[in-house]
Every structure is written in structure tokens, then in C-alpha cells.
Amino acid sequence: MMDGTDREILNFIQREFPLEREPFAAIGREVGVAGDEVIRRIESLKRSKVIRQISAIFDTRVLGYQSSLVAAKIPADKLNSGAKAINSHPGVSHNYERNNELNLWYTVAVPPDSRLGLESTVDVLHYISGAEKTRILPTLKLFKIGVTLDMNQGATAKKEAPAYGEKDREGADRNISDDDKAAILALQEDIPLTPRPFDLWGRQIGMSCADLLDRAEDLRRRKIMRRFSAVLYHRKAGFRANAMGVWKVPDERVEEVGEMFAQYQAVSHCYQRPVYEDWPYALFSMVHGRTVEECEAVLTAMSSESGLTEYASLYSTREYKKTRVRYFTPEMEAWERLYAGVLR
Image 1: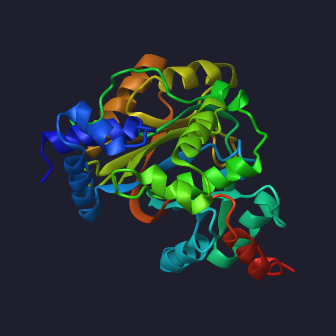
Image 2: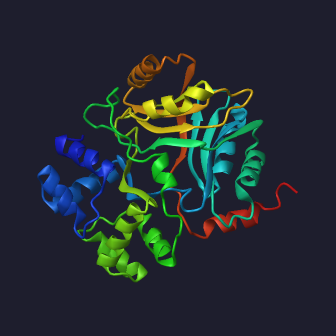
Image 3: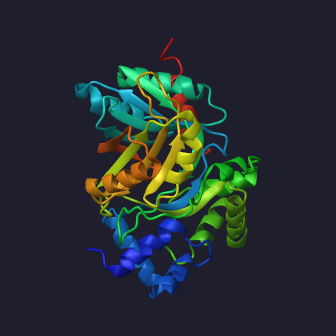
């Protein structure tokens, strides 16, 4: 069972993990316990599958990767095997069954030097999964990205300024040096639970702790790294419902409504995406709550404020995969070599 100190730690490290030589001691000063006690509690929260990972979160597109949300319709008797086939791609970070005719929803990213590219990769995934229908839904405009689960209040209609949006992405530096890549290879991993974790990482990549921390701050300043923070296992953390709110929005109102919805603290992701003849929803807003009722209350508040009534709530009924994309690693190239000829 989590106590109040656990919840304080979780709220703190979801927003920003300290980029300091002794980060756990810094967290301890914020919540009123010693650094070694913070480590002990985080170890316990990891063992109980509340904390999934603590690491840097990078902007996939800023790093030159192509990425998209993809929705697929797969026959029920092939869904598990189809999801497993899709999960084989190293760039698939999220994969969920949802309560919709399009019953499998996943995100996929491919590197700048991909021999297949995004669309051909999705074609391969469509084929090997046995999908009957696939819709590519890339981000047309980013209004908000950043998950923070309020461990005390749950999902509410409370407002706050989004931490990262389209202006951040547009203003990011896309010149990634070899030293940047070396730091990214370390910072994208789950942080070691030791008093001076950046010392350990620095030795692994041939940098001093000070140089690595300076590089991390520089990556954040240049908007390449969105933040360094914890990601939780939502259900184990008490957030058992997640609603993909999809909205039918007139073209002339997409920007206004997207910026409005991005202000809701309970909304973790808000994007404009393409519409299709069989999919008229231009705006996506992800809401995480402790219950379906919490999610629906937030979506109802959003509907009331915006005046939009044509929307749907897509709930995940099964999680097939949730991880972070690992950048500049050889697994992508190996997967493409294996599947490059599958459609010929």
C-alpha cells in the first residue's frame, strides 16, 4: 500500500526528475526524507509495478524519426497473434485493444535512415498482423504531450498550462551531434537506483558526470529532450481507465478547441489527426482516470466548454505493449532486414 510520502514522490518525479549529481537526495529534500529512503521507496514502487521507468523522454520527430498512431481492425480470433506480430517491431511503443470496430491501436516510429519508411512499415504490419483495415493517423498538429497522474485527486477538470506543445517542437534544434547521440543512448535507459546514477552512466559512455548533466540540460534547452521523468504503470498506480476522446470538429475550430483541451490537466495527449470517410474525428484527447466515471466527467466538461457534442470515448480493454522508443540502436535495422521483402 502506498502512503502519503509515496504519493508525493510519484507526483514529483512524474513532472521532473532532478538532473543533479545526487538526484534522490534532491527529491528527499522536497518530500522530507533522506535520499536513501527515496531510493528504497522507488525500489519498492518498481517491484510492485507502480513505476515503469525513470528516464529521458525525447521528441521522436525532433530526432528525425517518422512516427504515427495507427488504428487497425483485426478479427477477434486473430487479435492476440496480430498484436504479437505488431509488437515485434522495435519502434512500436504502445499497443492497445480498444472498444471500437478499429480494435487495435498502436504507435510506431521509424528512424531517419529506415529502408522501408513509415508507410511501408505500416503496410508490413498490416500484412503480418492479419488486419482487415488499417488507418494511419499521424500528428498534424501537437497541442499537448505529457502524462502526469495526480496521485491525490485523480482526474479532474482542473486546468494548467501544457508543458510541451507545437511551439516547442517547431523551435527545437534538429542538429543532433555524435556527442548528443552518446548522451541519448545513456539517458533513454531506466535510471540506476544508486545515489549518483549519472556518474555511472557517464563512465559507461566516456563522459564525466558534469559533462553528461550539462549535455542533458542542453538537450532539454534545445527542446530535443522533452523532460526527464517517471512513467507509471497506470493501473497499478490506481488509474484503471484511459479514454481516448475523439472529437468531430469543424476545420475552422480545430486550433481553438485543441488549445482549449490542452489546458486540462487530466488530458495527457492532445493532437489534430487526419480524417477518413469512415473516421470523421479530427481531434484526439487522451484522459487518464481512476474510474470510467472520472474520465467521462472530464470529457463532459470539455464538451460543455467547447460546445462539441459529436465525440466518442474509446477505452483500452487490454494492453499489449507499452514502452519507450529506444533511439539510435541496431534493432530497427535488423527488423527491416527480416521483413523488407515480405510484400514482394
